[in-house]
Amino acid sequence: MIIVHGAGSFGHYYAKRYRISDKPTKSTKHVVKIRDSMQLLNQKIIKIFHENHVNTFSFSPTSMYNNKKIPIDWKNILQKSISLDLIPVTFGDVLIANNGFYIHSGDLIVHDLCKLLNPKRVIFASNIDGIYQNPEDDSSLIPIINNNKNNLKFSKLHYDVTGGIKTKINQSLKIANLGIDVQITNGLNTKNLSKALNGEHVGTLFVGDNV
Amino acid sequence: MIIVHGAGSFGHYYAKRYRISDKPTKSTKHVVKIRDSMQLLNQKIIKIFHENHVNTFSFSPTSMYNNKKIPIDWKNILQKSISLDLIPVTFGDVLIANNGFYIHSGDLIVHDLCKLLNPKRVIFASNIDGIYQNPEDDSSLIPIINNNKNNLKFSKLHYDVTGGIKTKINQSLKIANLGIDVQITNGLNTKNLSKALNGEHVGTLFVGDNV
Image 1: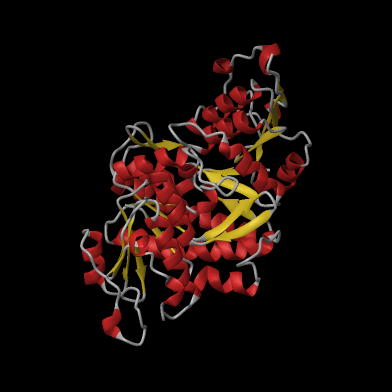
Image 2 (image 1 turned 180 degrees about the horizontal axis):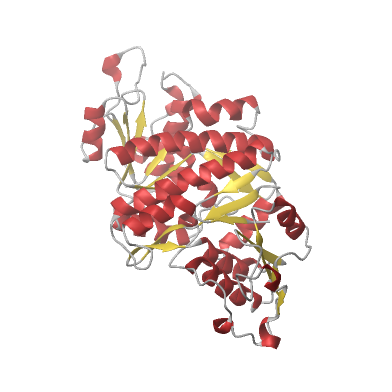
């Protein structure tokens, strides 16, 4: 297992304040503010894991990417960590590129890690139970999205288009296209999250299909 | 510039307690204790840098090594960070190897980074002014050690053989043999440290010579 967490109210605050969410920056001062806040958030998360005897190998993606790509060496580093019972934990952060610094979100990192490691499945722990046909109707939860066969038009769905869920749907489709199952479930519902971690179907499942 | 710091009373305490300074371990529980303490020390150091407007890209060497070696990708990552005015900072920590985890000290990391990046010079900020012929005689500080030409026998020096300074002399000789100048100076003497950073000769200089 690999865990990827987002920025929550930590990194996002500074990224928005300095307006570098969507374009690269050369301001090391701003970069350091964002990275310090992400380090603080990561420390808080790691502390909870370690207090509960879940041992982690936590690292910033800044160390992992070279020229916007994850070098192949990381396949070995991550697999070894997992084989030694140290769960890799990483997060959305600022990356170093040729023309400056840019934000790389946790969702994008998940996709890059899928290409590198080809895992059995991906679970997005969201704050909603899954994808709804109509977000105002609890009974309209879509249990299965069969990406290629149904050729579902997501633009026609009446879901609440916040950046967050839109990005997660797009990333889920991209990952499903790699042949990897993706589930979107509610991370605040620990029972459902446990089920998802054990391979049970909860929330919305994007069936992996690389046809 | 790249900064490498040691473990001080943080990581060393646990490494000694769990007796994994000299042999690899498979205990993820112990590894996590050491790594958490090193992360805490690094945070304290980074905080001081950032408060003084020295912007850093801080990372654990656990992220940098693959199979006991630094992958070539890191040359680009570190050079880019430096070119964007973000000073790389790393430290002695626990690395992941095929047969378990092992400690890799800051001194050894400096040598590995020298091989990767071929810097102009290395400064070891110690708690002594340099290497003494006789540690009880302040006037016996050795200003220059010309590694290959003098063929100095270090085993005959009357220095205080603590692990710390012995390792630093060995590492200095190894780095000088790569053709890189090495200075050992007193990091507690800020005036001398500034001079050393500006390229002045203070303390003991091991002249780089890769003949």
